[in-house]
Image (cartoon, rainbow, N blue to C red; front, side):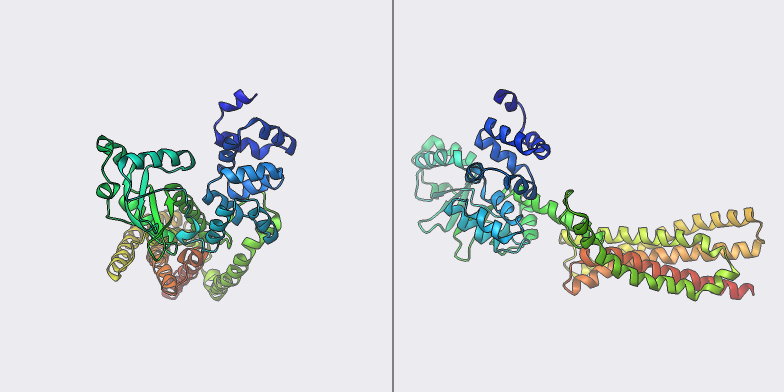
Length: 440
């Protein structure tokens, strides 16, 4: 049975573990080496891992924690909601790891300190190539990331860096000092560096690892590509949830109905009251609707088109914020100009198409030509202006919110749609009022 399990990847086993009952899991634990079992847990989300570990024997938990990387352990501890449980599981971790994990938990989740780990190779600058290779070989079984080697002095201050390839290539003269071979052009971050800045650095320099130093430039950890990838995924989840008007980005398919309601209901209540403005506008133009009932037919079309245009504009600007491409007034002005021109062009194209459709619609209905032409013009002008206004609103509202130091993704999504509904209705009915007055 053990041999059969060897053909399966850790990821595949992790997915099977999720659907097993307690007895099946116990049998599985007996068949898998602890190193592989640890990798299985590392392939689960922190919430999934803890959900399974809490029903697992203390002996296995201790052994898994002993093998697990510090950053993965930190994620699991942070996933424990109950403080007493958190303390209990922290006590099962080696003392050296426990101290580091406590310090990582203390950092805000958007800072490098919350995702860094101590899984790196550091050697003294005074070593020769021969001794350095021996040191790296000795550390390799315990270290996941060995392709970057960091050079430190006697006080653990970061002095330089070199790749594993560079170290091996220097083996032709093993008496050379590491100090003479290392690169001193160092790029590093601190625990208080925003994760977004670290992402930008790794992207710009094509780094797989990024050293983390304290205020004395002492090497205290690294940020790996894996850590950054997880941070990017979380950031995407946050943005999508925020755009949807959900107050908590944590997604769990096993969460209770009450938890789901608690996430969504507050936003729905707020939007309910804002949408009452939309209803008030329709009531205010009730006479126009009585005189020209056809107005109601094209109302959903104009609202939906404006909403779609605003959402497109919003999605683009949120992406630009995330990639730090709106740092200067010049960049902001250029983006707003692009959005204005885009809205104008799209508005004209859609308006022409809709104008012709309404003409045909009125002809089929048998409406007189003058009234049909005027009404088609109202609908076309409304959609044109609504698309321009909606496109600009989708860009300007997040800029204002960002200037107020509020996350634009959190506060923009559903509100943009509601604002566009209000403005579009005002435009549509105002033009319709002019039309009715002209025909009277």
